[in-house]
Image (cartoon, rainbow over all chains, first blue to last red):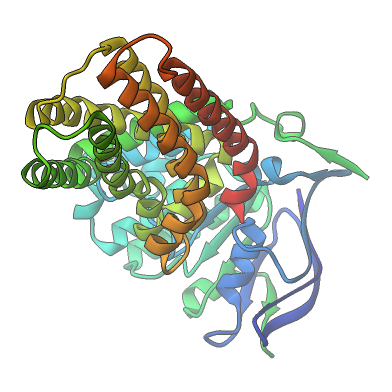
Length: 200
Length: 236
């Protein structure tokens, strides 16, 4: 799976965030997206996920010689960001089962153990700490084993054990395809082996 | 340049079909509603308050046309209160993006529509008998009344679900929702009121079933268009 940016740019009204982004990434690439607050890190991830349309250029996902359409792209991408919430009125297990059902995959007990949620399955999300909500976001982003993983501030609100969970999730992703990290935390940035710097 | 759909391109089974995903959305919404009762409380409380107010203000003895109009006005505004929450609630809870990434737009629409139709059915079951009792309404043709409620309610549910999704991300969604839904809802309400009035009055050749059929057809057109257009609406 390769992820290609073709002259991608984005602006909100007259305010330009970034322009002319050209890059290509594949399996094994962990790309740290760097930049000051407001540089467009989260927006670039949301554009890559297909949640925001870029004002210029295109983001493409290729499987070998085949360009994926929107539905295939949706199935190939996993996204975890602070602006996406699981359902607070549902338990952890119900959230996992719901999204697994939508994706057409079973809930993998190994994934649940990897993110450290096995003792929280029956707990309502509204009763979880922010750190455990973040772990659930990571689980929901990866339960369909995405070819491209997009993590926006993955270490936010996580303790040392939680950061180890992020490291394990990224390590697992390296074999499947590229992983983009929008991050300010040096511990998150350290996972990157390539860089996109915005607003430089 | 080759392109691929999900089913052809994936190296594992593709995502489930529309109906399977829609069922998951419906079950999820029912589970959330069972725990929070947000939509049901909003709809039922609005309906009961309005019903009592209408009962005191107008009361028994009003004409069949006035009673038919009042019944559908109460139904419409109660439905507007609850049904548009299907998508607004997802945006407010910031769960919409997760849903966008995991499910196709058509499946989400069908699942939300099914939930809203169930909600509307509960509303009608509670509201209509209370209305008939409070207003002293004489229903001459019960079958036609049921037909009017089913066809008009389904069409209203579809129109409000679709327009609710259109305005869910807007800031002034209340006003915008009313404006956007007006061209769809106004003819539906007229047909539903005509059919209901005919059911109250009875008598052959009153055009009641023709109005029911027209409401059902209009609702069907709205639903088909909504399902076809919803991927674009949902992802935009």
